[in-house]
Length: 270
Image 1 (tube, rainbow, N blue to C red):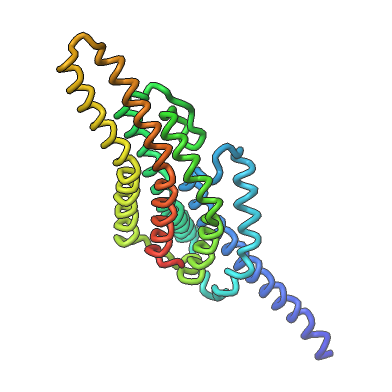
Image 2 (cartoon, rainbow, N blue to C red; image 1 turned 180 degrees about the horizontal axis):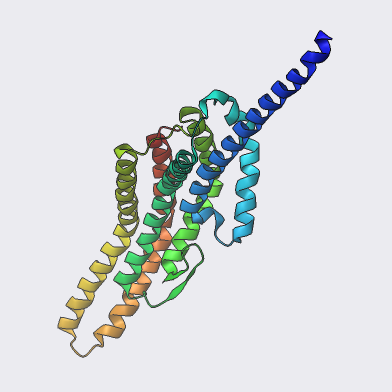
């Protein structure tokens, strides 16, 4: 009699425990997907050209792999949030993921900025092409440098570095424990400046060479006024810029690789 009376109570307790465990795993899954989704949103370079459905499936697949390890670091009794608090927690996870991906995207955009500076300096800004990651028309040199640093990102294992940073972020900042403060905003602003500085470093030799060729053409035009300065100067600028880019284009990859390592280190996730 006593055993028969205890069994229904044990079934109820088992059902409650199972329900709490499922709720815990569901919450962890949602928060991991939110942080990973924020990273993908802020880093369109890695997913440019992929349909939105494929991106969502990729995020869900990676989330399924991460949930078992991440869920073990979050106590089940630590998730007691209301509906509004869950929404705000998911928003913070998305923002934090966007910060992780944004620091890399700012570097890619900064290097691509060098192509726009060179195009404007040489008069090649009219030669534009479509950029799938932004959906806008950009100069061909800018698109070339963007593809270059994207290739270097994969060749140097930058995608694995990002996944490792994401995994480390879950151990240092478990789901629903992220706080958006002034430190994150200052980090984004600093990397915006670093991205612009990287673009200027890549474009500086070519722009300096173009200025020097303009000076030479100006001196020649003073000595030989009958020459067509516009036609000659434009051709000389383009040839000098392309020649110097062929000699210094490797510096773009070196600058990007160095700044990428520094960016992950500054995030404190390495």
